[in-house]
Length: 39
Length: 258
Image (tube, rainbow over all chains, first blue to last red; front, top):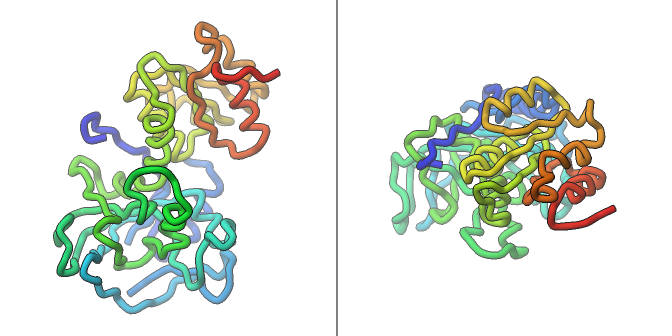
């Protein structure tokens, strides 16, 4: 990945305390890219 | 410290914000202050004990993927140092080689405690340093989804320039599979139920796209794309249903199924 500078596709970010909202967002599958959790 | 854990009983309702004492490292352990986590479909399955006994024991900290900074190391640690940015590996006890029951049983976020904690403690063998070019957000996505795609495209399929590759969907594994297949010079077809998502994957290098909602028999629709070779060299099957698997097999040039 380093050699080809591959960049992952990113989706929404949710705060730590909102993990369950993040899981629901991923389950709904409406967006694209990885769902992230901040700390 | 803050953790999320499944406690009391299984089920998404029992996934709660909670507290645990801060971990102290053994001689070969590292302590990581987590910065970002990233979600995978398996994180929906674990709270419901969807992997049976292999899901682990309660209380269980969920979520497999993330990135953080090493803040403490045991006396015998040599692989990483305080200040290094690392990802815990999805399988803590599977550095290489064939799958075994013990290796499968070392998955993070069930059965082993995952990354939804301010501080996590893993063996130095279970962490990997992150390339500097990746942001924290980007690095957090790699351990499960990217490795699954790499394992499929590179390790098992051995995809090469000119190969025809078909990828089901536009989820985490699918998008990494697209990137890795293009990196190896393959011709890639992506199927999805959304024209908007298909347009997006074209901008990321997909050569052909099929909307499987408007073109229900996508296996047949893919034939002209692969006519010169008689089918796809590799299909990344992510649908997860028998029908989806069967349709995937039907588009393979390696089998004949009528």
